[in-house]
Image 1: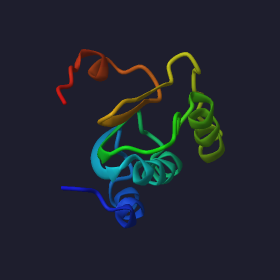
Image 2 (image 1 turned 120 degrees about the vertical axis):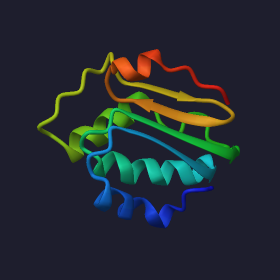
Image 3 (image 1 turned 90 degrees about the horizontal axis):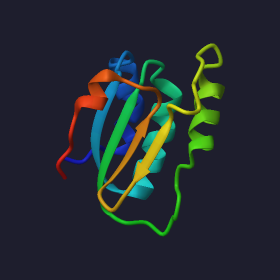
Length: 111
């Protein structure tokens, strides 16, 4: 089931303490909008993974510096180690790690 953009704010309101989140969107373009909303609203977020079916023309939709800047704007009291932030984009998913997590380090994903 695809996650519609219009529900991103409702997800934050109802599940504001989410740490790990995996969603499916139709395209990477939709994912980028969802990511902006979630980065600004989920203070405890460590890992965000968004699957999509349709590609985009964007080469690098989310550089690491952009992610760090958005989080610092939204949550200035939280410290983010730039070395721990990673952004992976491939043909099927966008994945963002905001800091090291022992749960994430032990997971393997099959797509």
